[in-house]
Image (cartoon, rainbow, N blue to C red; front, side, top):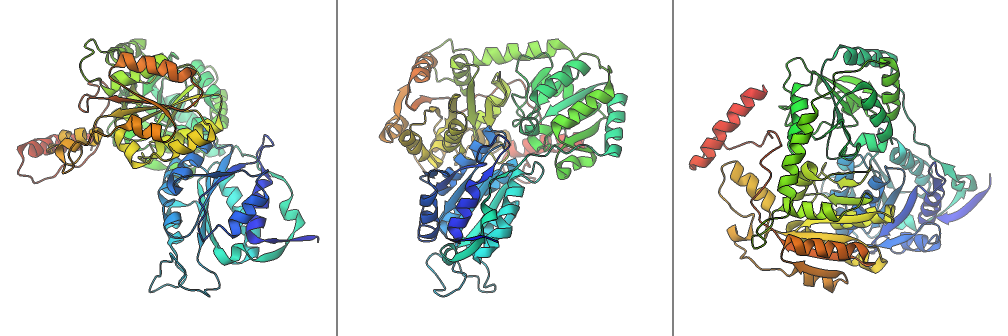
Length: 606
């Protein structure tokens, strides 16, 4: 057996550079890195040696550069991914939030945090957390509950088993999620005679599991017995590449489709059988057909509480859940009829088994009625002197967008209103991180999207709260020449949670600056963005916003547009109940009234 002598870090990077996807491209498209004493000598030297095959990108914050890596993978339907490395201690812990985001959203990312010395010679090393009762613990153990696969590299030869396991997890459609390889810093620099064959190019193919015979028969029987089925399209439709298969299925069998946040854009917004967004942030047309459905066919969805209205939405007493999902865990939720299979394969087989069986077409008037209401709230305001609503800002961005535009967001007011109101034309033209709804994902995520699909027009919708929480990768985008358009809506605080606080009877407290111990500080977001190299402007009306968006679309550099908005209005139509527990005891009559309403809703659900 021929061998080659490499350090463990060199071996890791050489191996990763030779792992290919089905298109013959490197599956790991690059490594985001912030170096510290725990990774600069070993991993830093190794990355320099493969810089032409495995690019290294420098971020500003460990969490945000991980967000960029995750968004990259999501936008490419999990067909490629990135790695992220940090030093030990705070650098590693900064990535734990991003790992949780990837875990919730079933997205691949490889975390390579530096770790303590395996030989324990300098113990305790700088930034080491000492567990008084367990000498094997380091901060990287925090990754364990938010990783699909975790390993600690304490000997150079550990890579021979750890790296193939990592790649299997990253490319497995069911187990896909974050992988953490905690890399002891002394081991990174240790040499070992690795088999040359370990570095042969390898292609990882994304399997498409076919359904079990008995599960499939039960699923077909359930569909044939249904009278008013509805399809809930989740993110798995995109990951499976099943958007065209879904379109053909619903056109043949005449079943209405409603979309989750992750599933939005699975069908074009104006497709006759796309009844729009479902659930708490959904629209009337989608929720009405969902309430009446006697069979809910979930495709690639986790059935999150926002999708199900905390399981109060599907009101038909005869209703059954049929869950087509590649992950058995998701397919068995809430006593569903499980159909564990790839979404594309599952739909093709279901369609063949149904033959010409078709259902009564749903009432098209429901959809027309909803979009009339949506168009009214997104229209430009009549009075240009009043603060615009977020709905009106969305309307302006919609009018300025093109078919290839990707609109993206993650937290605050915008996710709910974009889900309700945005008209997505093409698959993956709507990118929402709402599994973890992580404030600060937006700008870094926009960077990852644009790196994944440079020809797409990427518009990042971000509130002032999320911008304040994490904005540093704006400088990275500018420095890399990656063009983004940011629309910052400034409602002077956390407007979304302020409305929720009021809706549950609470007093306005600690969300808007005006109701906190921080006085309104009048942050000049345009000046801040300009200081990081972006072309930025503040506009005072929706008309000015549309003009600025037109200019940004034709610009070659990153543009930032800031607009003040009213923190209170939200769409009156659409949506459904969401279980947010209201205090049983309060001195405030508003809370007591809200509690009575809450208890009545609980009884209706049960």
